Image 1 (spheres, rainbow, N blue to C red):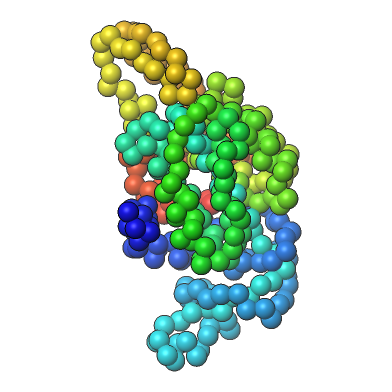
Image 2: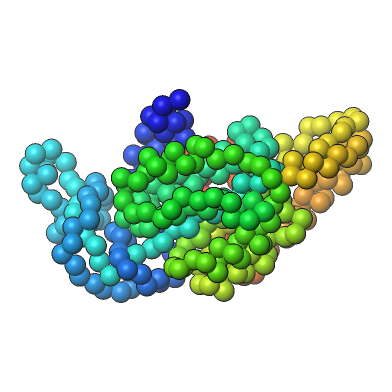
Length: 297
């Protein structure tokens, strides 16, 4: 499969055109080395040219490159390096349970990460990706500028779900080793017997603006299994026999309800922005409707 095919497979060109009009937003101000094209409470000035981006309604006409307009009859803004940037940390759960569903939860997470990463890179923010399993297993090194987008897509398209989960250990280690805080977006099914709370609190303690995108498969929300079953745990390999009758289904639905309420309540109580989505929701709808106005503007 070629790079172009993988790119189109993850995100369509039409979707990318829509994403170009968006920028990341944050509830906190972060001091950094450089600045992307983003409103900030801090003012700075620099003459170091960085990149162009298409003009959008409300942009400052002082930064339009009129030479390009004369040649192409299209408006583009000149972007300059300034005093501050926003660091987008994309944290993906790559454990075995994320293999479930069609598309798999990890596939959906990779599409979300690619979309958010494109917005950050196109806005000249710094973007990095880390994959969490029983530890921080792999990552995509932080970068700025849309020229790195194909590399991000290549990384996202190669991700595979495998192994056990230790969200708290992985997230805590990430918070400790990160040199810069910023917006941290965890994309996970939160299915970790050891919990995720301690890891999310570690990110908060290190001044990250934390979002959780809770990804679930439709079959997890409304299971259609029935009769005598032999189930295998995707992470531990444990095998369990059970009979899925009406009583078992009622018990499952109650445990699922408790699990979802616990996750949402924990996030709300700790000022973490919580988003829930199932993988049958188009990625475009999730990004352009559910995240717009909260994480994107």
